[in-house]
Amino acid sequence: MFVLYAMPIGLLAGWLLRGRLDGLATLRIRWGGVAIAALLVQVLLFSPIGAAIPDLAGRAAYLLSTAAVLVVVIANVRIPGAPVIAAGAAANLAAIAANGGVMPADPTALAVAGIALDGPSNSAVVATPALRAL
Image 1 (cartoon, rainbow, N blue to C red):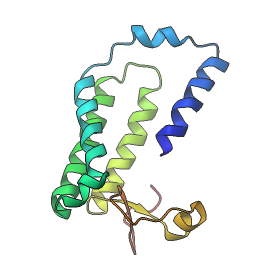
Image 2 (tube, helix red, strand yellow):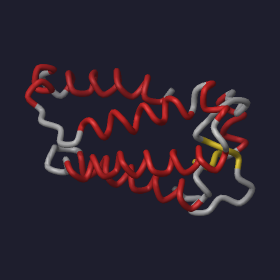
Image 3 (cartoon, rainbow, N blue to C red):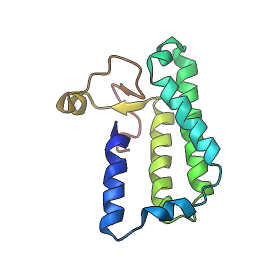
Image 4 (cartoon, rainbow, N blue to C red):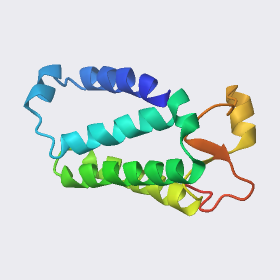
């Protein structure tokens, strides 16, 4: 869901900073197909189809697809802003790896946000999350 908010906010910020949307057409993203494949894996994992995937296999697929995204971002580190994205992607990967293939979620934060983890999700409540600061 966050991406649905982040994209229009990013477009608005670019416009306010006098960026041009047509600049995206000239952007050359290396290994873009890998990023799209990783995104599709995650869409499947966290859809109703994902409920049929064994837990261990789903966690491994999530971890590998997240690592693939990090590799793509690093391959494109020359793009302005990519180093910041790489740092965030590395932090996400570290948190997911350290917590057994799930992004730990704080139960209080979930309650405040009104989110219930009752279906396939990339997050799980973890009693004592590793790398809690991430």
